[in-house]
Amino acid sequence: MVAGIDSSTQSTKVVVCDAASGEVLRTASAEHHDGTEIDPEVWWNALCRATDGLLDGVSALGVGAQQHGLVALDADGAVVRPALLWNDTRSAEAAERITAEFGGAAAVAGMTGTVPVASLTVTKLRWMAEHEPRLADRVTDVVLPHDWLTARLTGGEYVTDRGDASGTGYWSPGEGRYRHDLLARAFGGRSPNTPRVLAPGEPAGTTPSGVLVSAGTGDNMAAALGLGIAPGDVVVSLGTSGTVFACSGTVTGDPTGTVAGFADATGRFLPLVCTLNAARVLTSTAELLGTDNAGFDRLARSAEPGAGGLTLLPYLDGERTPNLPGATGTLHGLRRDNMIPENLARAAVEGMLCGLAEGLDALRGQDVPVRRVLLIGGAARSEAVRRVAPGIFGVPVTVPRPAEYVALGAARQAAWSLAGTDRPPEWPVATEADLPADDESDGARIRQAHRSTLHRMHPGVHG
Image (spheres, rainbow, N blue to C red):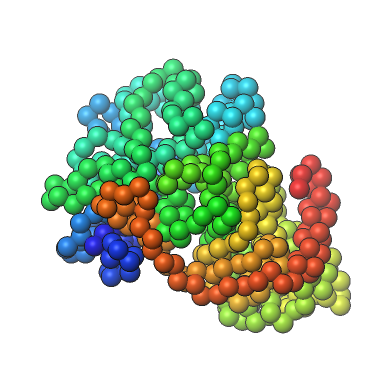
């Protein structure tokens, strides 16, 4: 048996699987508290609670964790300050300065695959150097959440994998190495130690009781491993935020900053686009209409494609893709004869999916093949979303059975390390629905209306 640990922003989830088949045998979870910074001991305590009594007979385990978080350590291994998480945006201005100092967006994207934004580790280091210089002077090591947990499990050195390292903003997926020049300059001339980057499938060590610990990885990379995606597959995740990521054989470096050019956990690459508005667009619209999720779904399915001429730009929390942090939502095309609940529900579904479809187009613009979408996340359970998605995306859509894919990916990596093979074991992924792209004309019309409204409201946005 092998175990996979998903240490996310809000909780720790654990699955115990059969190493050969991937069958889930046991599960558990423990909550974290909300916030944008946190004492890493909270992660460790949650891991201990979630795994208490769960790991009997387990031969190997792996950790998948939230990307980008800054864990700064001193010479004694003590945490210098609470970890700054991916969703802490205080370093937005620092991201702009780093980009300018290194020759602009295209130059930085060429170095690290990604244009700096507030979520990345490198920008948090700049913020710390500028606002907490005394604490910054104490820092000898900089690690990520999964790196810290892995070292805590093994009691050994700090190690990482290429997938999570690629989300720091100072590791180059194309060159396969840290850019210490960028790191030192961003951190005010300081040169902290960075974790050793393990090869895919290489173990990190063992626990005191002899359980093998794999390299671990970031949460998006672990989800890709759990889903077993291959080139041509694109995952669209409809959670609180939306993510669009793919398996690619070549590195990307998008100078617009839309596509983050990450590495994956297998030796390939994981170009990724993120939106701020996804499932909450649907739940917020349902609340406005005075109904629950099931009632909202019935309303949306009752409307015709195009929502009677209504178009929603669902920027309810600003937006990251396109980069419109101060934007608000826009409902366009409202007339007396179309202002009915069914059309508003349908416009919410179409608007959310059009935003994710822009992410697919951004991947295509980086020569990433898009042949099939795997639709996951809470909103993927909506029948209305499933009916609309293939036409909007323009490719067949597969809906895998709901599962903890980050934890499953971490478990699959543990099985890989345990086996000592060149490739991870083949674990089947159960499917709930296979949806052909059979209404592309409606989808093209809806997307054109969405683009026209976007350009009317935000003329400087390309797309």
